Length: 437
Image 1 (tube, helix red, strand yellow):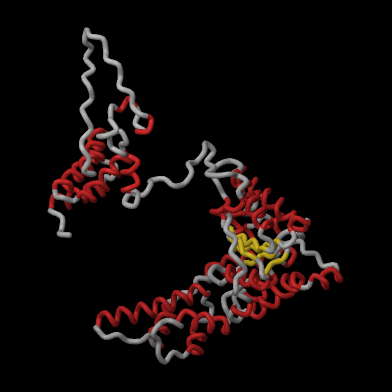
Image 2: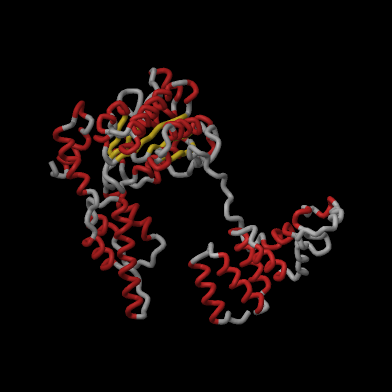
């Protein structure tokens, strides 16, 4: 197909800028039709008819573009002294209403035209419209929440973090895996596990590994999934999350950003947010009931001191686990993972691990990205492709500032002055070890 003339190109640009301008689109369709581009003209007219279904010019142009004879002119309706002739009956098989004045032999078959352009012009609306209260579906439809099938990720896939794994095994996984021993020692399954620590250190990945260890489905929930502008919808959404988990048991419910979803009610002015926290408390209290067997609750937050204290009482999220920046074995695994498919040469990973002390997993991913970018730009500048080397990686490590430092600055004050009941003893021990306290 030859290139469009300048006028048609200009009109296409104008139509793209104003897609709802029906006269402009019809003018483009006429030019396409005059240029022998019937298919393109049909597509444009079909879009125009979506915006203006009753437009007479659009209907006439579609008839012309489809190569059909024009419809006869409407009869003269001027009153005359003679009595009106009896109307000619239209057979029911034509499917054309009498009021249209279109006969079977010369009428335009709009259904056939719709079928012909259906592949060219998709429908504009495919989802159900919102109701008056903002609801887009059946409030009892729990299938709206996606539960990931049991994954293949295990704790063995989490590099390093030996202390984290041991705590997880003792506080959470061992009782889950051994129901007989649990009954023998009277160990209750009540309560959930709260993961906290600086951002970018793998809390979500650990939660998925726990689900993999349990052979359970994984349902990840964030504040955006639950909170709703309509009164009562947030509580209903939260209830549907847990109802879905019960249906899909065994299932791990992972509550991300718990400090936003379960913020302290004493600091919350909006009654809707307080009601959401109350609903979450109600759902957590149901964990020990028979209906909730096989539902395991994990939560993650960067600011545990902002979480409502009622969420952390015994029987709810009563076990906490500090997830710190990756240790040396974990940094080794993370660096190898992010460099595995990149062109590297002579990389001393052990040296790189020592140079990245204090960096989070997200920082390490950024470091590898920055090193690759440096080699790419150098290759583009010289015209010679070169590999990523230690020079690129060490330069990137030098420029990467640990993103965890602001978190530790805030956590230090909390650990010193708000360590009620020893909730942050692990954090204090780490800060002393790193001489940050």
